[in-house]
Structures are given as structure tokens and as C-alpha cells.
Length: 264
Image 1 (tube, one colour):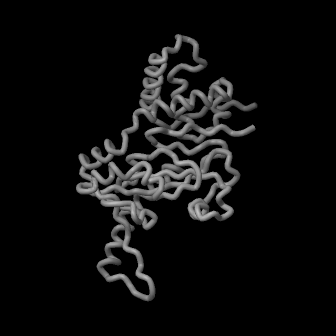
Image 2: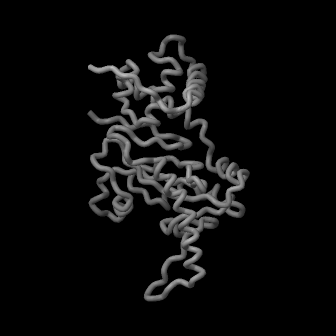
Image 3: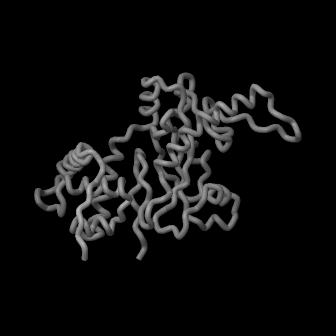
């Protein structure tokens, strides 16, 4: 066995912030002093490592000297206390308006669940609603308005299990707050959100037959695509599909999903 030193490339203040949240949660329960295998700071480092390095719970358990079941439980607690700090959609939109944003971007993401044999593509996950063989592939869809120009998500909805279409997930979680904000903060979306409602702007569809869109309409579509791609890229990067097998990608959700257990 070879031992080596490693550095976690995140600010120390981040781990301390998470540790304070965990300490408050332990006081709320209340947890007897000295009854935990890790201190609040040690548990915070465990959680930050999972988010930052995509370390599997088994690896975290080995490195922190705890059993894997305890690593799972501690990781669930870290995700829960962080999720409690996330704003709801109405609060996120109010903050966006206060910061002077001109619009937000609504997009969906298909997330590979833990233990899936192969990551499903977006096209396969969407086509599975039509009853094709891909329906057997376990997927989860989320909807998320993002704030340009950086595209970092302002808010992420709860996960909808199974082959749920983007529009369906958005209708479950997003419309009321988006409708109220539409006058000052329109929402840009792709053609998959056709019929989503007032304030959710999509490109104009190509007419049937050999007709072409007017030049003004084509220009509008091009401008909207150039704005929307920033948010779509940000959401894709924040839910990277390259997580190791056995972990689920973290998302800044109001009710974050705990990492799924691997079946033995």
C-alpha cells in the first residue's frame, strides 16, 4: 500500500461554512457530544470532496476511516443542510430582477442515475415517452431557469423520475413563478417548451411546406439561440455526465437528491 498527500482545491471558508451548518443541525437534533465518528469539519470535508472530486462513498469511507454506510449517511446530511439554504424559484427570480438581468433561460437535463450501465442520451430519454425500447433505461429529468451571461443555474427543480419530458417537468415546478415574473423578466426556452405559457419565449417554428421564415423572424430566432445557448451550456456543465459509476451528479436543488445506493 502506498500513502500519499492530497490537496482539496476549494477555499477553506467553504468547508467551514458547511461545518457550521452541520453543527447547527446536530444541535437541533440534539446529537450527544463525541457520539459521531467525524467532527463537523471532517464531515464537511467529506461532502465537499464528493461534490468537487466525484469521489465514491466507498473511497470517502476508506479515506476518512468510517464504514461505507456511515459515509452514505453523512453525505446525505451534507446535501440536506445545503439544500435548505437554496432559494425557491420566486426568490431566485426576485434576486435576478434586482441584479438587473434582462431574462432567464429555462432548460431541462437528463441525469444518469447511479448504477446505470450506460448513460442515456437526451434523444433516447425523450423518445422513450413514445414507447420505444429505450423506455427501459432509467432516467431523471429536471427543469432549470439559468441566468446569463455565465449560465450558472439560479434554481434547479426537484427531480422527476422516469422518462419525463422537459415541458412536463417544467409544468410541475416552474410556471406560477415564471408567469408572475414575465412582465419584467421573460424566459427563453427551446422548441420543446411549445405551449408552456405566457412569458416563456420560444423560437418561431419553420412553416410547413417549402415556405421560408421572414428575415426578421429568422433574425429573432438567431438572437434568441445565441442568448439561450449560454444557459444551456452552463446547466450541462453543472450536471456533468462524467461522474464515476456509483455516484449521482450533484445539483443545487431546493430539495437535493441524496446519492443513490448501489445494489449489491
